[in-house]
Length: 412
Image (spheres, rainbow, N blue to C red):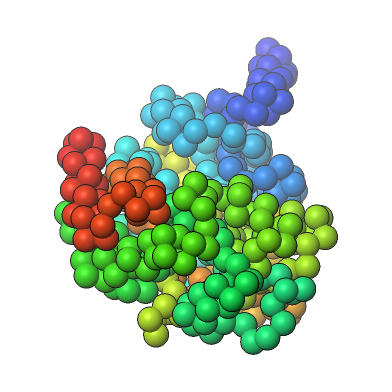
């Protein structure tokens, strides 16, 4: 009967993986692990890409063999809300590895995040923004896996002089014939202008605590940023009113535009298309560093799992954090969140990814609280109105704050 049960579990896991859906969590085993404790079977869901899943699985199986435990690593292609529901029903993963950190708020709200125990990682070894991204009220609830931020792509066959050190330099060069386009209506890409001018999403109270009642997208700095963004389209006419990422990317790739803002996920595509390009740190805005959103891929442990599973899960994460980051850098262009690895010769030799890392140093982590879900729609909507010259910057400031607060009120 035991062999039949194990065979059934194996078939279920393989079937779920083939369909792109995570499988139900395997049950604990009665056999002993290498440490003498009862062996457990861990289920890991990852939201990274297929080659990265394979890399995770390789390290996980090495750990399983040495520890006497069992691990199944499944590629999760579903909505993050489905993972919340699965965990609530006792069928979710023991570990979620590679989750975008701004989705942690929903798991935290559901009480599903286990606090990171002492000794799992050395916090001083990680980039500060990455730790803030996985913390609530001064306590860590996930481990930073990798980080990403946007950078300035430029055509090396078009941009022959000095690279723009300031955004005004970039604007001058763009109006002089080089061109500059990006997905300006996308709040993720555009927030850096707002942050550089002193705007913010939610007030940072320190120790990883954000105040969702204090929205800083309507202050004077934010209003100045809205004016600048509107001028790029309405006054400078650098971009069409219906600009989106697909259009901006195509125009950069074809050479119609020489400057483009995006992230490391575009690097391989441009290389395969033989686009002559490089990436630079984003220029300053009004004398202040461009302040992009920093995204962290994080690993958390299911706080609803048994104590034995949680303990084993943290041990596996320690192994992954030691053996995996450079592999993810190679197969997925993932920037390590550990300071020492950012100084690794192989990482530093990649000038493009080094530029993204430099931009990240000036950035702020995307807010990780559940209230952030009420920000994206209103912020994107206001940017669309600005680009189409349908609203004044001052009115945009008033509208976006009201709409965000209304959205947060509806969450309660």
